Length: 119
Image (cartoon, rainbow, N blue to C red; front, side):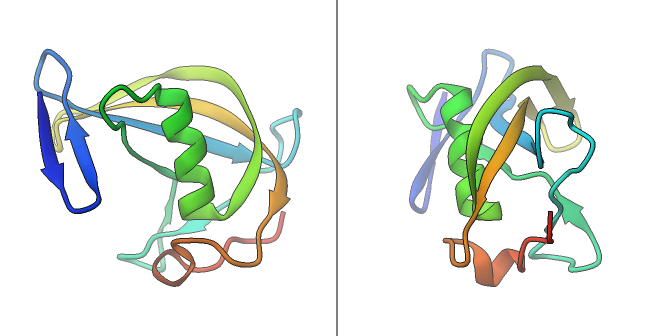
């Protein structure tokens, strides 16, 4: 099932849950330091970069795209952590490790999400 939204198309799994992908952005392979991204809705909260999986898009590509758009980072996608379900919002999110190799000074969601924190 798909549903259109401005500039994207929402996709749903067989159970009617919205398909999403996200990543935890780490400084290096030790996974000891994580990049924090401020929420655009509440600057006192932090979010994990993630978003909807487009039709025919691999969730891994979604996670990498969202890390660039929301956190302004480039790097290497790592291991699959798991699939997390939010019954209240009816989302299922595939979560990955992402090792950051570059922090951009300017990126797509910089104004709405806030600046990324120093690694």
